[in-house]
Length: 76
Image (tube, rainbow, N blue to C red; front, side, top):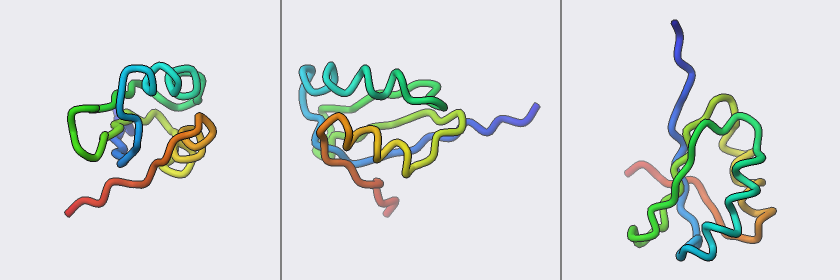
């Protein structure tokens, strides 16, 4: 069976539990998100989204709607 699930990673300013709580309803309601988490211990506050069809652009729009800064994590 083909698995299209992919991990999308972003640099954000979601830096505490309160911020995570604020963005939770937005990401939970977004279609095509299988699972997501924010590594608030990482200096880049890395948001990892396990995608079931949501695109990078849609994740960025969703997080911006919640009031946070977000950009694709450059793979360097």
